[in-house]
Image (tube, rainbow, N blue to C red):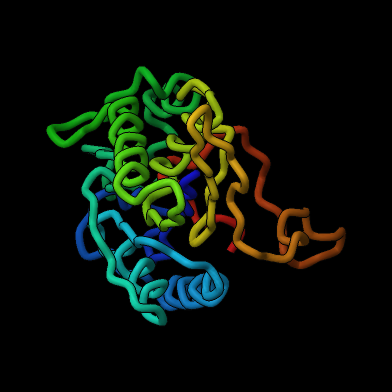
Amino acid sequence: MTTVLLVRHGLTAMTGPVLAGRTPGVDLDERGQLQAAKLADRLAGVTISAIVSSPLERCLQTAQAIAANRDATVETDPRLIECGYGDWTGQEIKKLTKDPLWKVVQAHPSAVTFPGADGEAMRDAQVRAVDAVRSWNDALGKDATWVACSHADIIKSVVADALGMHLDTFQRIVVDPCSVTVITYTDLRPFVVRVNDSGTDLATLLAPPKGSRKRAKPATSDAVVGGGAGGK
């Protein structure tokens, strides 16, 4: 069986408040660099056959941190690039939530093609991402464990495919910055071994205690397009 470690890039200054999309020159900030270094340490004992990355800087920098302490180079694959959000690219998330298309992205993403000349259909993004993973699996062989460094919506779409879920339910999956999602592929079916593992204290998943100065954000059923900044 072939095992892929799906790694989301670390934090950037845009992650969370802004939909970075394919904006060029978006680098990891200090938080993201630290996340990538910690992730590299966590993976130090794992034999990795290949490290493959989206061509965007934030993914390349995350992948390069993983490669830095081992005899490995980073390959790029354009099929792992972020979804083409078209005219949504670079806009604030709080503004996008008021766009009528936002509700469709939440409830019926398979019907969505983002507006503008560079807008991509979410279903097409899933097809190319799954194709990338499957083709690298074939190229590396059944004994390989490899890293694919990509973006939240891309990773979520691969997980949905592995789980046999329709794309319209993929917003139920959460993929935080610098998290690891593990999928093994066998002849008969994939097995989703781990999702959104960042090695963090589970207390980060809980609401702060009463009287805490840190106020919890209002609960929402919406998934953040682009993945958001996680619980960091």
